[in-house]
Image 1 (cartoon, rainbow, N blue to C red):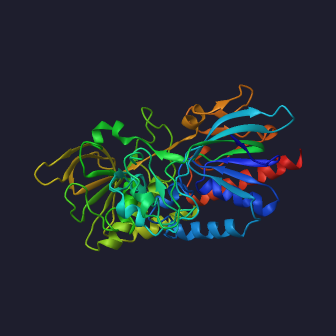
Image 2 (image 1 turned 45 degrees about the horizontal axis):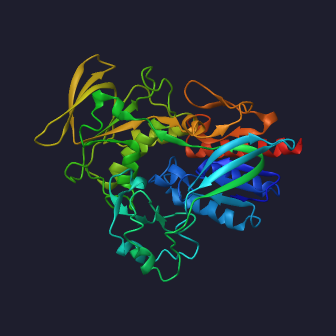
Image 3 (image 1 turned 180 degrees about the horizontal axis):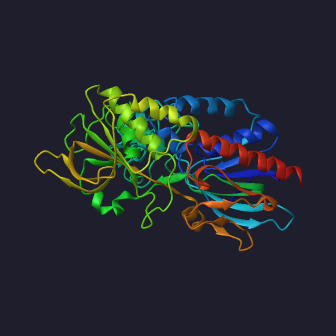
Length: 432
């Protein structure tokens, strides 16, 4: 067990866009240490898994590169990353205000000597599902997590690596960067404030049995569509349907897949409409002969985002259908999908044939599940609502939230939320 020198530090749980942004805002404003605890072996979160984000349609690594430059130029040692780590215990400090924490860090099999040369992966005989591409392809058991990984080094998946039987990667490394004998460690921290920036996950749309996800290969989710469109994705940026690798032209985007449904997610996930609009544009950009159709209940593009909607609507090949898809079935001979649609304007029921369906799965917060894994003092108050979001920060106790830990947000608004959490930390410390 090791103890870090951090008497007046800030802990940020989650190293996604919100967590990193909050850390930068704090350290660039005041001389204060920040520790980011991230379960993955790299920071950046789900934003890095996007092809582009709206409304400018920029690739995510552009903004992430700016953040990594800010990290490197910050006061040395003020931002500390504990990757492959999770918070095990939070207790109130007996020596006054603040908290004591225990953090478990998985074995760090790869050290900073790694030059990402890739020789280790070339000799690795084991494969694993590529979680960065949502399982649509495989990597070796030793792998590069993402094209813009930070820290920039390979990772080892200990669920698939056969440590005792195979050390080929260790033997192939010329830089002594691999140690398969590494052990997990327990780290103790003392902090004045905690920011929960635990991020989100897509709603489990397989629960929507009528829409066929998990039953029909050509029904995918919006997060998978992001990876299909990305040049570093499983298809090299070609939007191909999973069943036969056919380049698709006729794709249906189905909104509110689980959202605004009392049996699933009773709330609107805020970004799904914008995500489907940009993905329809992906399809049109990559295949000019394509004709996507968006089935929606309401199109929600608030404020200046209406300009983005206007841009999509100006493309006559992108069709909009105010209708509810009640059921999806499959033509077993062609792999095409047959949609039973109730047109909300005419009241008619139609049958629509498409080559692929993209479900706009809602956003669910990770915070409720993450807190279950942490032993927390009973007198530490974390207010979580019935939908699994933190609804009230505890300013007096120095507990704050950022990003989708608080409510569904897009990338831009997540940055604003992070800045708000950072300001709250600075104000709280000014009163200590």
